[in-house]
Length: 217
Image (cartoon, rainbow, N blue to C red; front, side, top):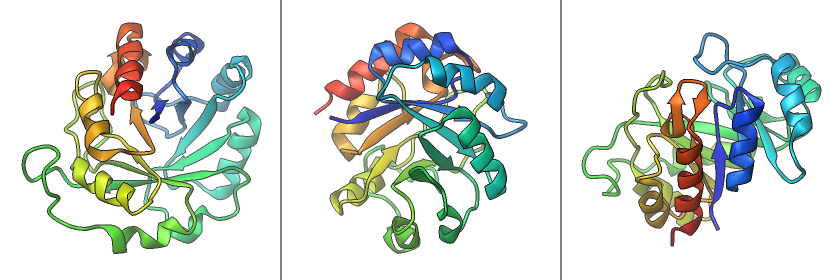
């Protein structure tokens, strides 16, 4: 069954809604000057209040290793996601699993169609250092507007080669089942696609997203 990560969590209410809906992981964005930025002081109490077996992921963007390790330890994060221009070797030395975000161009045609390029060689070095690759859009982070999905066929091709792929970008309760059926990813990641406004989740959309993602075949 496909795992689900609800990202951009900023408060305990949204965190518990996601967990109760069946989400496997929650994402906390520690990237300054972004719409859903949170501090360790805000995240640590949320993490402590969660039930066991929920993965908590900290998102960082070209931050120093010392800073990342300090935040991870203070909050008790169980995984780290790197969203910047980190090199493969920059992912070494952390005490928890690491996810590397790979940013892809907009699709050239119909969703789920043939990808215009094959990224396997480009990503190969990251495979040795990251527990999973998260495929995201190259567009700037959303401030509430809808994002365009990426080529799902790229995720499908990498998953077929036994890459552990997390599919992101432009996913919503309306399209996530089709995305999962097309790409068969290890997991899916959603942020603005289940929001009432930036930083606040819509409970109904969260429940529907998780149900659609986990029910897809």
